[in-house]
Length: 460
Image 1 (cartoon, one colour):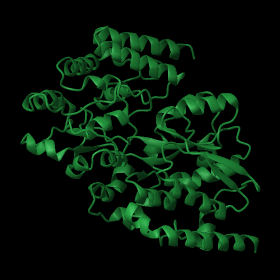
Image 2 (cartoon, rainbow, N blue to C red; image 1 turned 135 degrees about the horizontal axis):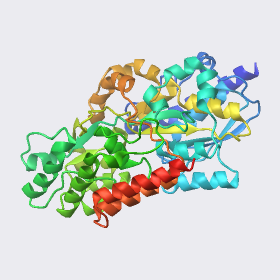
Image 3 (cartoon, rainbow, N blue to C red; image 1 turned 90 degrees about the horizontal axis):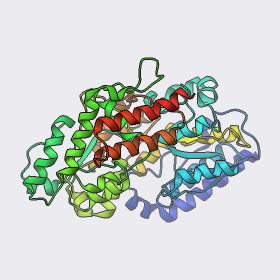
Image 4 (cartoon, helix red, strand yellow; image 1 turned 30 degrees about the vertical axis):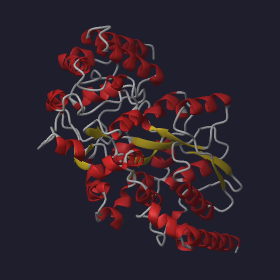
């Protein structure tokens, strides 16, 4: 009876809130389905969603999503309302984190012994905390304990980042990585008829666009200043260059002459003003802002970030059309970026925290998020929903029917799980920038990069 009363109260409150905001939400979130099970859940939904055992009665857990509040606060609050009705007696506190400084904030919280119980991390951050031994082992907590739940997740996303072969995250929302937005205004002004599909063609194309436009436009820019993700090493993988030796005891990317050729190509683009000089220090957000200013033809990013272009420059956004992202010689279809949820191993309420992380990543919750913004679910069951099987009129709608096949077959481009990950990231970025600035030759920078990483590997 107590649970029934809670359910009825939640339904009553939800219907009252939806009645007030429904008109606004239909305008702001045109794909939102207010009659669907996420926004209008039933007692049967709550029963179906309750899948984790041993959730601690009276648990109070804190949730840290980053870069999602206040824009998606109503969605996040609905997750919490649904979860608390599914697991009565558990209280979730939403503590939205700003994008700026998020990684350092997480580091500081662990150092102070005050991390949240469920933390949103970019995939490039997870191994650092896994190595420190502060995260729950998800291969055990979900993979062994709930194998049917594990099977729902996209393999490439589950395996995107590991430490010593173990996964310490639940994959949340994904990026459709091989998407390129094309500024139609520039495309038409220059009278272009086609865009290259490979990086081998794209290097010369960058200088051709710069010359053809009289220096008015760039073909593309780079987020080379982004620390997370070990950027250039993933580029090597895309070109079929081996990063590790056979037993992964050492890196060997510097031994392949193609690695230096790639850095030489990048330096040529910089030296000849074929890409913006700011690419050296830009992160992804700054790259998108630069594209939004209307001076860059192509933007390669996840479609969930196209909304930033729309916010910055509606005229540019209205002109966009989609093309195929440049690929390297290996023609790899990458899983792309993965946002993750982790649970600190020291959480006071580990079962409640695990239940909430699983709840956020269940198919209904993730499908509802995909209706809010063009992201893609890490849960394969989501793609059975008509929202994904049918298209729509908007720019990103044309991608939805392709998502199921794409994510079933997308692979991790190569698991780069280094000890002392933060230090390795600094090494890769520092040596990469030294080559592009001409402080070192490309080969010397690669040799130094490999030697410094191998010293870390050898010390383990």
